[in-house]
Amino acid sequence: MPTETGPGRLLVSRASSPAGSPWAVLWLGHGAGGGAGSRDLAALAAGLPRHGVTVVRHEQPWVVAGKRIAPRPAALDAAWLAAAPAVAELAGAVPLAVGGRSAGARVACRTAGTVGAAAVVCLAFPLHPPGRPERSRLEELLAPRVPVLVAQGTRDPFGSTAELRAAAPGAPGVEVVPVEGADHGLRTGRSAALGQEETLEQVTAETLRFLRTAAAAG
Image (tube, rainbow, N blue to C red; front, side, top):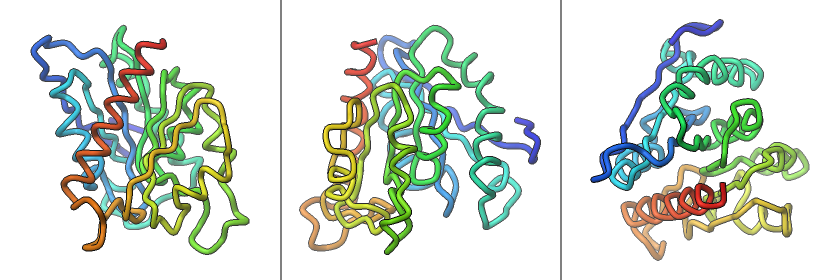
């Protein structure tokens, strides 16, 4: 998939439910620390197609090129938008939801209106850099004019569940779901109530519930 900064890549996990055709498409971007193989994105790509959701994981050109440092937000947005026609063709007439983890969630929020998304799924939204709560990115989270789900670790140094809820009390359309004991990578420690696999199953189930609700409302 060509872009101005080099080729990107779309990894498509097609809906495999008994009905055959998808009732929604979820387009996901990765974070600044890795590609589409992160544990949470992989869990959604494995779990959601069984329930009729096609999952598209977008690898940015800098990852495809083997670079270790992500470019500036404007370049991330441009590469994401370059893939929009291909994703729209894949979605066809079914609702398109966008999202991602960390930096990918920020891209999805900033561009949701441009691509006509029906909903946004944020995994570990980076509300602020670690230890710098004054550098808030709340404006990006509130930018979409569609329902937004945020699955956030309670131990996330980029903004815990409690911080997100305090920053946007009663924000219309934004639902914050706590991932107990998880950090920014949605990793859980030994003292967490749920193990790693169970945590990812919870995130997948919450995402499916949210998408069904958004599709019904739309």
